[in-house]
Length: 228
Image (tube, rainbow, N blue to C red; front, side):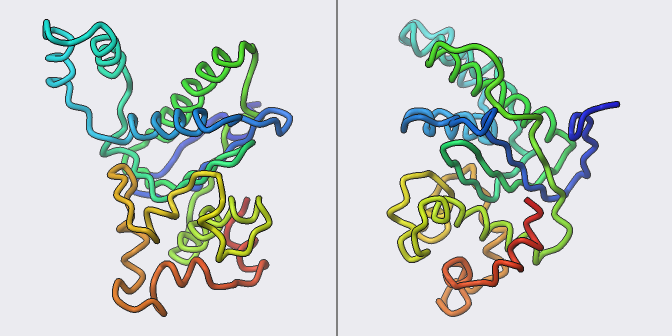
């Protein structure tokens, strides 16, 4: 019998909450570079790839050896632009959360590629062997707009909860998330904010996404809708 989540048939044009943690709940991010590398992999996978430009870098006599090697790696790298759209994320010391829309059936390939690539980086950096993640990743289908919104709230506040901070201190949390893109207006082009922001006002704080995120909510509501 296949283990849980080892065989996955996902619906096109559907939203999913993807998450995983370190084996034995060990840390998978040990310093700022680790967070940055994981995010750079997300950006690589979810941004459009200009193969013509990359090939020009490889063949140009003006390109350095480092530039050519990097371009060659990006040419070979799988790309999921137009197939997977990332709505929100949060990275914690021993786990991560992603809220995505799958436009084509590639979640399994995308998540396995991301996890394998990061594990190879981590093992090489820290001179370790063996699996990095606890199990096969989990992916929960989002079944309603209400669940979609509260999952984004849960994910964005997960680092705040980890630090036991009040939500008003979210800017002081040292762990990366996409919350600053939504509240501070950062423009990470590989994060698709329109799916969530369309439910909220752009002009009135009382009906804004920031107000939704920072307003208290019953823990039972979060538990019922996140299915984590």
